[in-house]
Amino acid sequence: MRAHRVRALLMGGQACVFYGAAEFSRDTDLVMLADARNLSRLRRALTDLEAEVIAVPPLRLEYLRRGHAVHFRCRHPDAFHMRVDVMSRMRGVAPFPALWARRTTITLPDGFSCDLVSLPDLVRAKKTQRDKDWPMIRRLVEAHYFQHREHPTPPHVRFWLREFRTPELLVEVARTHRARCLRLARQRPLLEDAAAGRVAAVERALRREESAERQRDRQYWLPLRRELERLRHRRAAPSMGAPRRRRSRTDA
Image 1 (cartoon, one colour):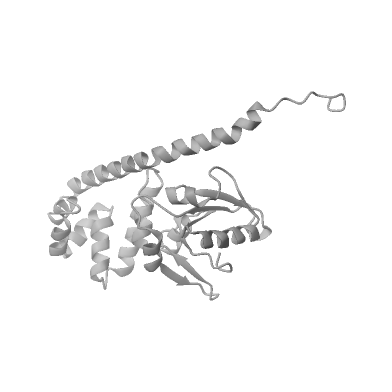
Image 2 (cartoon, helix red, strand yellow; image 1 turned 90 degrees about the horizontal axis):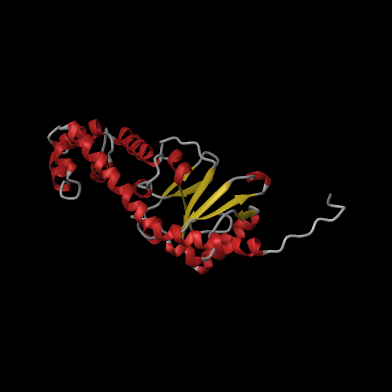
């Protein structure tokens, strides 16, 4: 991707590893700029990886712009069987130019640099209907808190108050930064309970918050899943209607 100058950001499980919320992942998840030039660069990179589409939809701008993910399996020996998932639009997440502007760039010991979606954007992208994403959100925010709590900046505190899913730590931050917490309570009402130290109430509110997000994600994906089903049916239809070949004595 870097060699072909693909405008893309790492997200998903591998980005979680970089942010200190370790998760083993066999997949490489990317969010990319969906325009013709960048798509051409992506195709060249995928050709080098000997990557093939493994499901619907095909790699076309119209599907990326509607929010579909396109899935690939690599055949190159250096990335054999690695799965690559590419998206350009996600529910509740800013458009790609904004993601790119606030990206995180990490340089590894060997000098290779990697562009990731920012931590707040990764947390927003993880608010799905999938069970495995919600514990990861909790670990991501906790890891950030323990890394920065000794010298927090105002953006750090806002991030914790908006995204914490650990009741005890949320109460701790709310009491330490009470004025800012109460200002943000208009956007996240459970912060009033956090500021008052009502841990049990915060726990209940967090469960309701998660349930509502899961439901919004289900509703978001309904039309996209219907479209995928139509594509699968269309792809399978020719083979279903093909005549069966008569067996010969050689076949037997």
